[in-house]
Length: 141
Image 1: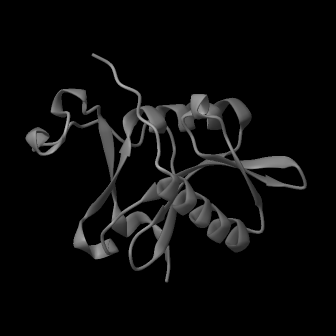
Image 2 (image 1 turned 60 degrees about the vertical axis):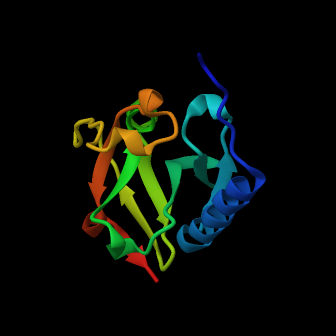
């Protein structure tokens, strides 16, 4: 049985707030991409693409965990877009206590499924993801 997964208004607003933060930080315009792209935003300067940007949200402080998890399909799609356009693929994350970003390259991470599949509402639908060490992010307080 398949089910539609859609973001709540609160999640959409938080994603836009994160985009606004990074847009100011990097002096770029962030354009929301259609869901079919799987990546959240395109970053533009003077209407020219400079990066593909996926937004991440953590409900924890950064050092509460060792890694940030990104869905493997988003990682693959971001890498594909980056390779085809020649522009960067960036993961931008908001933790409770800070912001951070990292440039992701293809082939750097192997997919994993994790150990505690029973903790998810639909454990049989939990897809692969990559674990990115929090210490690898450039952090802004």
